[in-house]
Length: 157
Image (cartoon, rainbow, N blue to C red; front, side, top):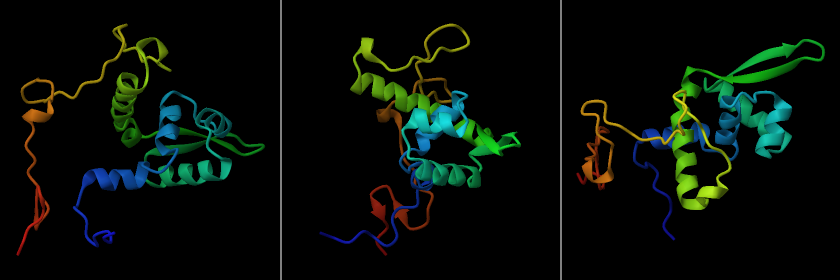
């Protein structure tokens, strides 16, 4: 088996996953976006062990994805709320949920439905802001910006 490359492709996906890709991190964000930001709610609704949850919360706060706010002085207790950066991840959560609904659940077996303010069920889509078209794989062209990289991998010197 070949060793992992020492310098993998520079990538915003990898950088983001380094912050939110650990087990339970996106589930914590889901719960906080749903308004369940107290520690006991997070333990119950994510299934995360308390010690791991504590570590994930600290990392998400340090990364600027969650805010930690006191809600009781005696005993000291805190709740977590999404920051602007955390709320920017909510469409990612909605898209992951829609993928799971399509590929892992029958129509009558979906665990949750999200309703938009217009009163209709949310069906997330990625839309090109320039032309308004729905983004499809066949319409995309990657242009690597990192020096020394092509779409296929490192440029040969």
